[in-house]
Length: 154
Image 1: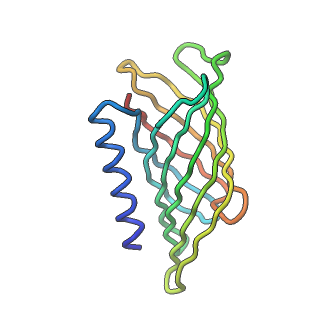
Image 2 (image 1 turned 90 degrees about the horizontal axis):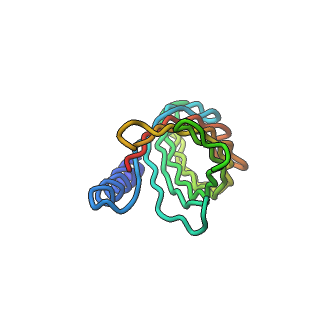
Image 3 (image 1 turned 90 degrees about the vertical axis):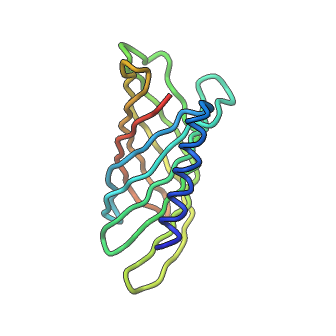
């Protein structure tokens, strides 16, 4: 448990330092997951755009509930659909590898690797920052479903 909190704070510090330097868009996120049923908090960043429309967006989530604490680290590749952008709204979809570590109340821990498939919508705000609503589906032994609301600082 202590490692999950330390890892989450370290990732948040890296995102914050990068944002202060003006290098990458980043932000906090929160929501819930199913199987395990948890409240999740975390952070995300857009670290690169290797090809037009595609971006590398690592993120992490720390989940609490269902007698389990979860640290989930995602290495996502996402595509933004430029043809669907209208009135400051945009749509995106992607996938990525996920590492999840579970700490069970009184029953030890375990780590799992799986695949996440995601999709979402984002809204550009007046200050050029963004809000996003994202659905994530897990394949293998990672949370089966996650819904998060994120804030992107550009």
